[in-house]
Length: 272
Length: 269
Image (cartoon, rainbow over all chains, first blue to last red; front, side, top):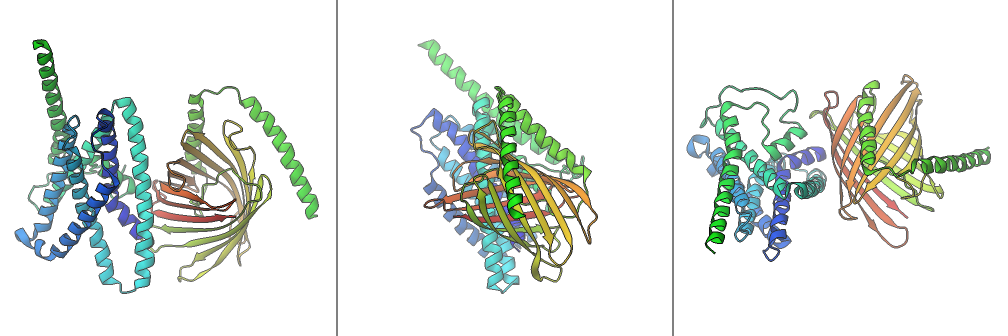
């Protein structure tokens, strides 16, 4: 029970810790540029956590109503929309790197969505277990201790990632955290795509290759790579196309915007 | 008899310290930083390569030892290991220990090991005595060195295990690298006499005293596992302190699938 709880906690809750770590690492650079700007605070994070827990409870409560909608694909559709929103907000967050006025709100939105989506998966497990088992003693020893240890391990990974990104940022001029964040967003988008494939809204084509023998998706390394980079052991042509477009398009748009901005600055300087 | 052994041990300790002092002094020629990294990398790679030379019959994942002993140190310790093999039943092992430093740089620890059997019965499975020997003072040389000796006897079965190993710790700013390399010989009633090697590697970031994230790697007996960990210490008055550790290790080669959760709580006084 204890080890199962830790395992499921790590699989579902780790993305929440990782996204906070990525956002904090990315914000550190913005804070360095404009220290007067507000920075994600512990109180804001606590408020988002409480709101997220309320949303998870609501989602659980309305689950029996949502699930049969759209010919039984309601849950998959809602989750795929939420996953896509996470990606969109991450792209907006990255593109507003130099305009941090709305950044805090967007970042809090990302955390809230990730908390809702991934937290609700974990809550399904807890609920299913409480229905099955009536013993409070087993519940206490297994789930509570498992959650405490799982939280400690998630914190450990998140802190290490944060300091690795800070170290990388010193050599890449702050771009490492943004790229990692983009990859995380692409990973979320891939999960949305997989859900849509599951309910046959998108037809899953023939798989191009399989790297399961190297890194299985259901292994711990596979989970970590899926969260951080959207790793897919057996990708279809559609998934591959979406994956690369989701990386390349925002980068190109950002470069174009930066180019235009620099052009405007040069023009203003020229007229002076 | 005991006095003679203790005297021999003391002399050996002093002789070894003198030899080591000279050896470390000779090695203290300004080694550039890059060599530090190379040394650690070579040790780490060696630890991964040597694992294929042994055969399995035990759990490799345990505590990563640090090469430090405090004078007049006494401690009680509890360790738990919960391995889970590919969704099958969970095994469970508990260790209770009492340790005391007998010299400024030597600590003896006595363990009682309990395990849960196939029928979910929990009973004493073995007992062991362990000696941790701090060879160099902390920060005295390029790295801190220690040694570990352990003798284990299975309860009810006449099986024995002798372990000796080197403990190395190197600090790079707020990061600590610890390597344990063990040579194990086991023999007995139900065991074929064999020599095994085990390596444990830990890289720890000293973020806060109470919370230090780490990554641990274990290899040996055809097992290779790695995973995240965290540890911390809360200091009280005098020498009293409470230490905790937890790690979630995943087998990463084909022969070591599954997970091991390990927890340790230690009170020093």
